[in-house]
Length: 519
Ligand SMILES: Nc1ncnc2c1ncn2[C@@H]1O[C@H](COP(=O)(O)OP(=O)(O)OP(=O)(O)O)[C@@H](O)[C@H]1O
Ligand SMILES: [Mg+2]
Image (cartoon, rainbow, N blue to C red):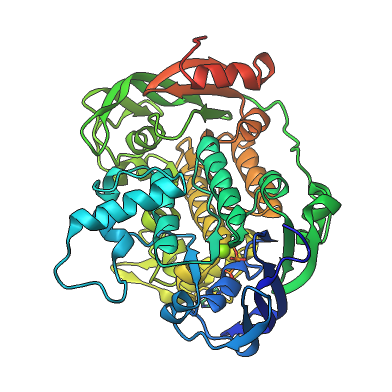
């Protein structure tokens, strides 16, 4: 990419408000052909909103969008629907995928396209899709159903879907947030190849390392404003983090030695199957003690999900036992786990974590509605529920106009903070009932900005130091090394070893994750 490449798209003075929120404030942004342009910013800074304006999902209150031709001469356009955007060659892969699980890859790719005949020749559609996937070196199983393929593959389907519609400007909202490091590297290579073909790529990310290696230029949004557009070569991670949050950010965390207590969560010889009926946990045994963080390392898909589900009553075990603080809860319903003091920060925030259409207050009170002051006999006290949520919003720094906002309107990172607030509070009540709380946190810092990551990590350490047994699942080895008292490595549904961070290395963990070493 050179500075002289023609401009593909320009946003001028875009302002977008929601009730009580100035999401975009007079934003300018230019993206050139052949360029990978990263969009950085704290949770709630307005990144997704700006891209939704560009793709016609939202109408700006003010401002203009201009599209460039091959020579770079610009013409103003009006984009009032995603269809308009597609017509102008603008395609977007959203933060939350929009694929239909019960349809095939090929069906999803052509779904909703103009001019698709009523009766389809799926054979030729599949051939088209296969050709496209070959051209961009993005392998996908064309005739598989979406529910059968991995998140990484779904991501590729979303990208192919945009390309199939002729996208010249491709927007990706946190494309690597839910991917394994290997899958993320593949996406990066794909984006490079697409930019090489002259496409303009805009990608949103919170991962500074990734931005530094993948992007040509970076624009930083803060509180809805464009605070800087810089060449990646002329900046560094610290500078970017500072631009984002307006202060220096700690990358390490203080952790006292803690006082490790008795075993609270015990998973003993558990065998469980995944959704496809395949054995996903093979005779798995783990113990988490009061006052410790047990980190779970492993490439996603090696039993992490089934482990969290077994430990929260969401999945049946075929063999073995699950006990919490001495109480046998094997194959008991989730509500029994909650009563026993087990809290859960699930990996899919809008699936299992939150009911998107319900107000934030209802979401935050989901574990509080059976106890006073919210429950008054058989009645719910809405005023108390709102006050309760208001208090959590404040204490956990959730950025939202208030407790009546539907959960889906929160930015991704703020949804995560809301779940964490609810689950940590539930743990506090468990303690009041004389239970030893357990907190199962699956990828709790995924999709969070650097400042929010710091907050979440502090909350987890605080819980642990207060005596909670914490099970922390993460893909980031740095995070596991920094946070955990012990790390268990999962591979193929088995524990390859349990090690103390001080007595292992990233390399050794990598070998165990690959199933090439046991300890
Ligand atoms: N449909 C909506 N209705 C009301 N408020 C909204 C809506 N969409 C976004 N917001 C608000 O606008 C602001 C910007 O949100 P946006 O989703 O653009 O942030 P973001 O930069 O993408 O954050 P994240 O990194 O967490 O995804 C936030 O305060 C958010 O709560
Ligand atoms: Mg977003």
